[in-house]
Image (cartoon, rainbow, N blue to C red; front, side):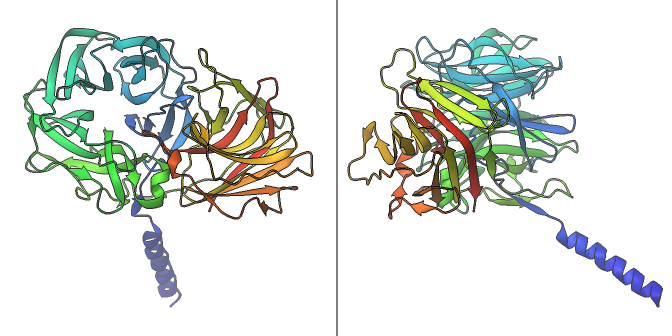
Length: 517
């Protein structure tokens, strides 16, 4: 009898454990705006990076053991390479046979603002990379590099003619063995004869065919219709045949507005997982182009398909059994460490930032970039991970500079809630001008430390609060402000801190917290 009861209990526990396992995960796997992701595997560890655009440091680096839970380890560049100015797009990681990790990246050249491709190397993806300068200077624009090893011969491909009055092409060239210079002539792989757009290509070979998986249509903004196409050839140089069933992955239906521009990684057991970015529909849009993951395979007809079909879906089968997906995490900083936490990013194209941290204080200031007269503030921000959250700060000094919270699009489009002189002020700037019709509150703070908070709902509806003690909050104005106008062409607004004023009158903060609903 006792043996029967014991066996029944064991069986019940076993069944319960099976039921309790996560058999699916939810996209995005990396939360927050990080477009154009690149993913590689080294041994049993996966690494991913993506576009950082007009925020520094450049190209955040993430690591994972299960493809689902990712941890940021640093950045490819803590300082921008000398030849560059801004617009750090589409980094592509490559693990070379010499053991080094390469990053082929797009940025604007400082001398003329044209987007070209550079290359940098590191001993490990978690190290800061050493830049080797400009690699591809081709036409009026060369972007979106990808590296392919064809039986020992390295090739680099990229998007060309995107700014010219002619069809876009994916072109390629041989690479030297060390991966640092081009060899031979540039040749065409695939032409956009449908005039739908073509970029963000990924190459692989399966059986007799070479495949190009690429993005088409519009990448960015609330009207994005980005999707994923495929073409194949029996030779790397082509000619390539486009799939009649394109697109093989798209939004517009279901959970996502759009999806595209990514690379795949192979698991130790030979499965392919494609990481690209996607805009969620509705309020999820305001988290930006977030990295999503879907399993990809070559079907019996020798064309590429996705396991869950051609419509981009939030819910996907879990790649590895026993994996439990973690949720979004709140962020808090008391500024006790001598270096900034990795989460912080700043608006480097618009301000020369001066940031000091440690001993419980963050001192923030800045000045106009060289050659500009206007200084619209130094913003130190975060990439939001979900549409509903609050963020708050304790301002511990007072002077003639504005010091406090911001929702920041760019230097001409932002919202501020800050302390200036002896008052708390709310301001909205659109297209470089103070917005007419917005209420501005000026309330003398009663304590040496002013506590400010912004509540965000649905990703773009902001409500503003102040407090004397950081516990009891008073709404500054009754109405909320709609902030969707802060979305820029290739990025969404960021919550964070701001200083606007003379560098000799910095902002001083003693505590910051962002809490998700």
